[in-house]
Image (cartoon, rainbow, N blue to C red; front, side, top):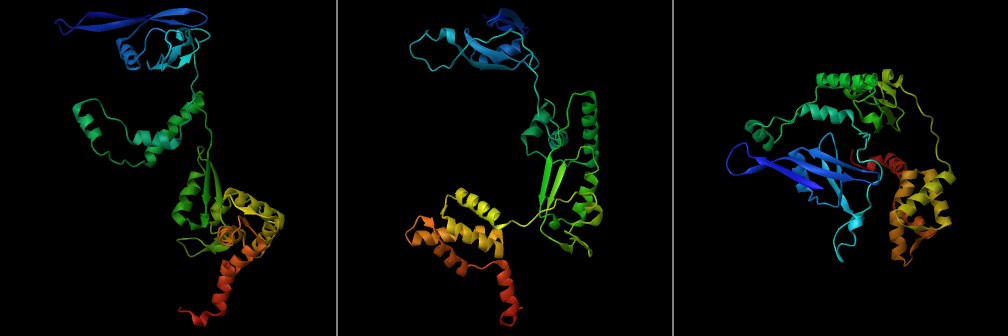
Amino acid sequence: ELSPEETESVTGGYGKSISHVIIGLKTVKGTKQLKLDPTIYDALIKEKVAVGDVIYIEANSGAVKRVGRSDAFATEFDLEAEEYVPLPKGEVHKKKEIVQDVTLHDLDAANARPQGGQDILSLMSQMMKPRKTEITDKLRQEINKVVNRYIDEGVAELVPGVLFIDEVHMLDMECFSYLNRALESSLSPIVIFATNRGICNVRGTDMNSPHGIPVDLLDRLVIIRTQIYGPSEMIQILAIRAQVEELVVDEESLALLGEIGQSTSLRHAVQLLSPASIVAKMNGRDSICKADLEEVSKLYIDAKSSAKILQEQQEKYIS
């Protein structure tokens, strides 16, 4: 059932307005008749809801969603561009728990750019180019207070994220100072640093430190011990890389690539795959063989070999 009830318009005249709408909902277990607000009738019209449709009405917001046509009306027409769905099971009124994932940055950004009112000045300002509002420390503190209150009340649950920073030695002292303070927060994510540097200079300072990280921050970290890849591990990684690039490499060539990776670096061995495939195609083959790798390894040298040549022949170059 879908029956809008009309009443005399409050502005007078001959026009009429919708006062409410009577709607009948049916499931497998029963039926229920509801008296709904006229704004929901507008949503029903927008969704083009008719008797026999399967719909979903959210009680809190009044949102209406048309799921499809009931399969009981499937034989009504011989040909119809409708999606038929079965009659809903269970009770007409259902409670549904909705879990929404929201990041702290989403909350900061939403509060930094609050929506204006419905007056003409607010609407005009929204139509123009939005101003970029800075997310201040005061705003972050207020958001943190609200989040902590929600956690204490059980309304929200904190799920810490993961922040991965590669080439961490490229950060300067200001960045490390900010991270040092942020790690003390109860809302801080799990932070993972990655670097391939030993004792080097901390950017923006005159001091040297392990991995280019200040000692006070380094003291807070748990350092994961890593080991150099062995020949079998390198061959396995290179085989996966060749499969990703859709290249055919035989076992002998993979073994040679593993040896090249051991003597130079894994990155250099991976970079030889593409030119080796081009050489193989030039020779009329679809797969990379050992001769192709030997040819490209003579054409392209690794960084260590290049540095050694520069050191030996530095008088021949402009410095």
